[in-house]
Length: 160
Image (cartoon, rainbow, N blue to C red; front, side, top):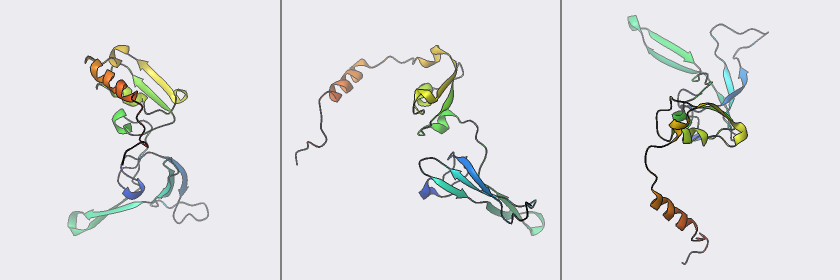
């Protein structure tokens, strides 16, 4: 997972998740990696989005008027993610916890709706009481939405 914005226009933003497919070490000669080298990594972010992520260098003042430098790859391992972090994403597979620790209304729906198909879904611990909302359903609103759906509106049939 990226930990900073790398290229906003390409969608390489803080929180983007992908799979590392290749590692390239600078100065890799004769099978040796130097102690202070940081590799570039090729990451597949899905949706035909494969990019090289290169090391970042940040300089900042230190004691005795000297400069310090921190070199890093702006990434961390991401074995799991919160429902909040996955909101807006779509995944092929997910293991989802639906137990007693769900804390927000709609959290189960958001989690379940991220997965493309039932084949990719695995549910860990399920507490059915946590899946039921505590607000009454507005049947009038649902009936009106269904009525509008059944009007047979054709967006191509517009009077000009």
